[in-house]
Length: 425
Image 1 (cartoon, rainbow, N blue to C red):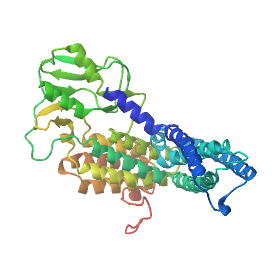
Image 2 (cartoon, rainbow, N blue to C red):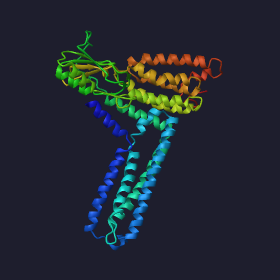
Image 3 (cartoon, rainbow, N blue to C red):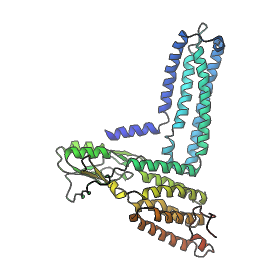
């Protein structure tokens, strides 16, 4: 089933053990191959080792690889603790997928198993000279990778970098789930008004992590049906919640239910693959956490707004209504999917930041600059929602700064929050 394949693929992408396990197996196989090569190749005397020297070197490499592996795990745990407290626990789903971290662990574990497989082959009349040399090279490579790993995560422990990474992931998710009709295709088919022939319900509770929209379109095309999805990616649904309404002939309801249920992947929480709004959720969480009284870092919220503006400006240039309709190759509408409109995206991006940062002058100034820029950049049909948010911002500033001498400054726009060039006051 598609949902099972999706969960397995997602688990492998987020696992910290899969690639290191492959590295361990590769180390054993590479060690065996190296021993066979050593039996048929004679290295120069400068590259040969005595049995005692080889055993000592390999034992030291095994110990060093094990120690470095433990240190990488320790650094990872510290990063998880800091990122959870500084940013958002929801960001960890992206952190677990970092390829550098998995590559470092794979090389270290592979070096350990490679060296250990050579160590047990050292005898009084045979020394794997080539293998000992390669083990030394692998140690050097492991150390260099560890330095890159440490440098990478030290620099990524900044909220602005995290916001940029999340915005990039959200944009990629938006592109991957465009799914709407191409410009110039036939007009949209109206949604069916009659009662559906079959309602497929969720077999269990959970968050909808992904939907196989291509599979649903293909299924509907083959059977001449029209599907109306009642839940969107990111929704948490209890067991028995309607998932999809089938309009058309249904010869075998039980088989259809099982097949269509397999097109929905459920889990304990949202993922970002098909849910670009989840990227907004993470960035807003980072900003609101920075605005909490315990942290009180409005500059961090301003930096997050920089990347929020870039992401929202990109979304605002899209035809969001087209994303709810999915067609087959012949251009016929086969499914309707609930999607967010521009107002929902915009309210998610700015509402909580405005509420929690309404007393921070640089936050309201940066938020105003963002909204004014969006008012000029987004599609005409999206502008009324931006104007409404500007009115809400005006009302918030009027209440929060009513008795303060900085009311005039709080009502101005500033791309840097406060102190930006070109603005007086």
